[in-house]
Amino acid sequence: MIIVKPLGGSGEDSRNCFLVCSEQGNILLDCGVRREIANLERVYPLLTQEIVDSLDAVYLSHAHEDHTAALPYLHNLGYRGPIYASKETIELTPSYLRKWRDYVKEHDGTLPFDDNDITDLVFKTIDERTPLLIQTGRSGHIIGGLWMLFEIENKRILYTGDITYESLLLKTDPLPKADVLIIDSAYAGRHLNQNDQYQHIYEIATKTISNNGSVLLPVPANGRGIDIYQYLKQFDLPIVVEDSILKNFEVLKQHSSWIIDSELLNTTSDNVFVANDGNRNQALQKPSVIIAPDGMLTNYKALYYFDQLKADSNSCVVISGHSAIGTLGNSIQKEQYRIDNSIKLKVELCTIKVHLDDDNVIEQVKNVEPTHVLLFHSAAENCLELKNNLTNVGFNVVADLYHQLEI
Image (cartoon, rainbow, N blue to C red; front, side, top):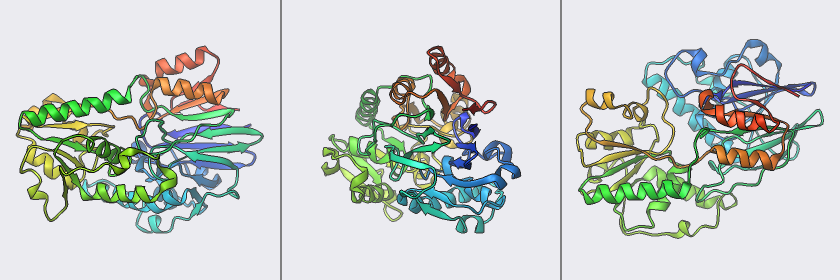
């Protein structure tokens, strides 16, 4: 028997971590955190000493903290086995682990690990000799992001990681057939048209600038951030972009195997001001679209612009993705918080898809033809309709932490 048990991520929006147990060994698929300052049981996967002692390997889909930042905790609990990932994910992951460590320390949180638990992790690049893994493909979410197909006890188990087929720049490979599908459903309960979402951001930008205001777009410094920058650069808009986003764009261009041959890659504009720590105070001399890391308004760069604009009712901030509870990006979405903190800056929500919505999930389930489905990356209440739709046509579906798949 194969057991697929969520230790986080199923029925919730983060700390993605999935345990697969079989006679061929026990493995973890990702090992992430909930990006909040809270107690250990809420932030980290539901790992036990028994689980840790039983593990043979860990497989990473990509580098983001909600898929990797519990790795040092896993090491602190005694895991010394291999952590398999793409070469690019191995290069990126340490910086995300340090970013999580620094964020927790800055907010007086508690870390269940020390720096040695970061530096002593053993990474191995995925190749044709990687145990149990028979196929991988690009997931379109971030450089190095993979979906992974395993063969265990003659069953094919497919883990999508975070996946989208609608990135402007990143390639995504078709999913293969499988018996078990562990699938990203971050936009469960929603039906989003990516073109409409981009158009909405453009309309917000043009309207705000015409009213003598600026638009702050806090974004991840790669993935969605680069896509949004390249999209807006097509238009006659004054743009301020932080140099860290441009550096990631240059890195992306060097990884040609991961990117779409897109005309956006060669788009140029004379209206772009590149901001850095030395000239940031010049960035607000005229109304502009300001693209700065990070998406949850926790980075000092985005916070600088927010502080400059928060009293300006002509300006706005656009939240284009998930913001964890406790982050400024989440708090400012609440009217009472804005009133209590004298924030006159308008707040707009416009999701740019870097995951799957209901329509995408149903389409991929039809393509993969599994018998068992595990939904992850979305709150259980958001998955109800999607789960019911899949269950009604014969799939065995898990969408919470309290159930597991048995195959």
